[in-house]
Structure formats: C-alpha cells, structure tokens
Length: 185
Image 1 (cartoon, rainbow, N blue to C red):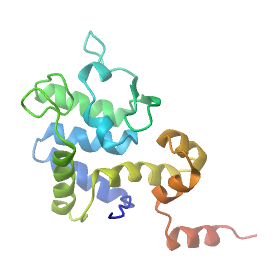
Image 2 (cartoon, rainbow, N blue to C red):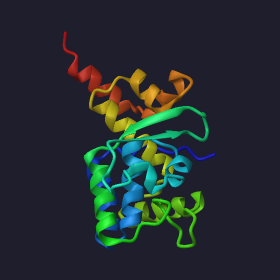
Image 3 (tube, one colour):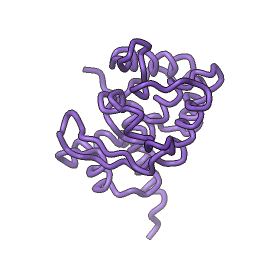
C-alpha cells in the first residue's frame, strides 16, 4: 500500500482548487473543497445528498450530520465559509440532482473516479501524485500547524488511537526542528 502525505504548502492547496475553478468545473471544485474542509473519508463525501447540506427552502445548513460508513459513528460537521462558497458557486452555475457529486446517471461518482479527478488535478497543478486521502490528511496537518491539539484531531477523524492520528499529521524532521528552534529557554 502506498503512503499518502498531506499537502503542506497552502499555495499548493490553492493551486489545486484553482485548477477546477479556472475550467468552470464546479462539481470537481466542490469535491476538492469538501475533501479539504471536512476531514471525511471519500466514501462518506461521495454519498452526500443535497438534503444533507441544504434546508428544504434551499438555504445552506450550518452543519451536516451523517453516520460514517467505516466507523458507524455519527459526525456533525460544521459547514465553513469555504464549503458554503463552493456549494453556492455550484448551485449558481449547475443543476442539482440527488447527490452532490452526481455521475450523470442518477448516482454518485465512484471512489475510482474521485481518485482520478484528484490525482489528475494534482499532477496538472504541479503538486504531484495525490489521492483523496492526501486531502483528508491535509486538513489535519494544517489544523495541527494552526494549533489544534492532536487529541481534538483524533476526535474529528474518529480514530481509535493516537498513533493513527500522528501518522496522518505527517510530521517530518523539519517540523521537529521548528519546535527546537522556537523553544529558547
């Protein structure tokens, strides 16, 4: 199994998002935004329906609630302004059906198709080989770099152990060096 790593540079994250915006591919842009901002597994993201994010009157919800496929746990995810903006952009420019990530035949795109979309965008953006899981890890890495305690990330990810969360953060020697450089006692 290949190891995936988070995207560490915020500029690369923006390049990835801009890849689809520049082509007016709003569904794929929204896919990237959901992967980066919800910390959900790709299977849970792909199964999202419009009713999960929109009230009956068409307004965007503040939270979505879902039962995660892998863990069976209920997650309540705050829909931040980045997600709301992506939803709004999609709704303004495209037709909504049942699923957020519609495949054109009434179902949602497959995990394989989602991987192809994300992988090709990473390569085209100059980021390199990335996967759906890279984006899940990117959320945790940037949250951690912004001071979110790893124990809270463990809760967000619904991990059963801290060691799994630690692997997700993709801590490298440079991260360790920065700690030693900052702590001057």
